[in-house]
Length: 255
Ligand SMILES: Nc1ncnc2c1ncn2[C@@H]1O[C@H](COP(=O)(O)OP(=O)(O)OP(=O)(O)O)[C@@H](O)[C@H]1O
Ligand SMILES: [Mg+2]
Picture (cartoon, rainbow, N blue to C red):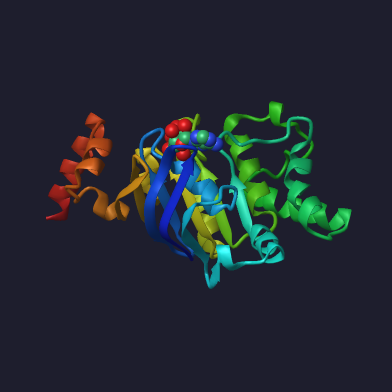
């Protein structure tokens, strides 16, 4: 569980996150949604400890980040996995080497233990035979799977994914969403995902935090997103004619 209270983040005079409070539950896929520039990536990087907020606090289960020593922060960092916007694989390394990288950095495993662990997670993301390929030889969907395997190789308690299905066709995008949700449940991880994809919202939006101009404009679940009259949400969701129709059908069926 991650608890956020009154989080503020600025860059110079640009005030980006303007007092966000929310809670991300363990074992659930928690989504941050909002338009481009609304502050999703800055928020996610603040949760990862890559940005230091000027005000507010973030608690990871019973640990308040600002009260931790440097060693404790380092230990917490090792409990986090991250899928960056655009996969961010190392081009000069094979898929297996990419996945083993966090183990080399953070574990004391032997080479053969690292290979075994990489093999387990590559199988888990349905890539049993891609170990020796390079990222350039893999499709976009495969690259996302590798990025997920690398993010979970260290058994994280917290998993952060920035637009994990951007650039994928709708079918592959849903497969990736479902894979992240399965892994989240299976390992009871607190997962936070940035997205502006409405299919993801409907498919895996167990908890949704909606950002607008750096404020939390709304929060709820995918079951509630069609029922709310919150203008920020309806403007975002129903910019698509398709979702206007989906909402109508959903509300009729819900009577
Ligand atoms: N390192 C930085 N230094 C200065 N400004 C930044 C920095 N990172 C982000 N910003 C600014 O913060 C604002 C929010 O950016 P952010 O990347 O969080 O948006 P986003 O919601 O993730 O958008 P997208 O959907 O396009 O990824 C933008 O105005 C951006 O220019
Ligand atoms: Mg972003």
